[in-house]
Image (cartoon, rainbow, N blue to C red; front, side, top):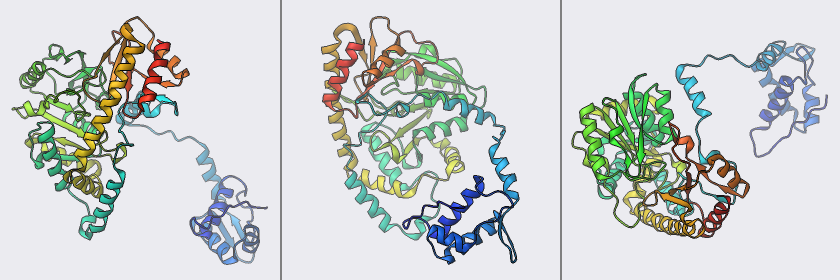
Length: 476
């Protein structure tokens, strides 16, 4: 039987490639159980390798039980292979845990720009960093320098809370830029803000516990809470952010995005911030402040963080470098009240021991060197320019047919058509015109009162923004 086994000189050893080719032929049914295999000499001639390579491949087949040898007769396919093949054809019936079933359901519900069909010429994606602006050459030099100076002792497991230089750098930056009150001991470095949300849910929520969430809200938060079995109370959001009047009398936690509400873009007013903290005190609740893009603000200084106003130790602050550095870095952080630090650090240890150390050290140097601040200023300027073009284009092509919210901070706005339209139809027709936009309906727990379109602008060129809005105005 002629065999086609493609070989590569740059891949794994030749005998492993021959072995894999023979193994595949056996499992695919090319050789039946009990059938004699070609001699090593024949295989060597057919494939174009030495007989020694063929012998080593056969030895591997024998060692793993895919073949059996008969003295003086040759090598035969093991009869046990038929049992393996039949087992592989059947789909396993696996019983999932409650968490597993909830996770499976979440996979069908999560709505993210990264899952949208690509490429399209005018993609108003949101929640992504501006990788064109990021100084990758400087980052590579820092990463290489950290790798070169790493001691052997640093290659062992590290602190679950994260490396101290990074925690110190995070504290220094947050005190200055976001008025966060913290010490390095209160910082826990995590693998992105999504892990922070997951750890908080695992540590503080039992099935059936009441928690408050914004409506609309980030799907990652809502799904984490659903998987945890929480009883979520959807609190309406208006132009001033979450309305404290809608908070339940008692709850374990409240999850909010006060600096740039996701997805509406509303900024939580000062009065409501104090009202929220007062509610947390009365309800005996913790407030989780997700400051996912608080670094981006325009025209004025941003409101200081909610955590900076907290005097009761009831706010857990979440931050991430996914927007300000790049998403694949997967480094975020928790700032927790001191009594909770050890518990959350232990939860982080149970989850994945710690976030990779080398990247933490590189990020710490990146921040301490001033490169991070310079990059932030550069991104703010570019975002501000794109935002201005976006708003001008909306005014020019749509005029008073729409309202805009969320333009004071962040890197996305929401367009609210004044006339009644079908959100799904607008998104579908825009897609046919080469425009990717995102409806707000999936982010609501309750039925939305009006349709809205979420437009991100951090990755689009100014000319693309103008043309994309012009086409969208024709769709509307």
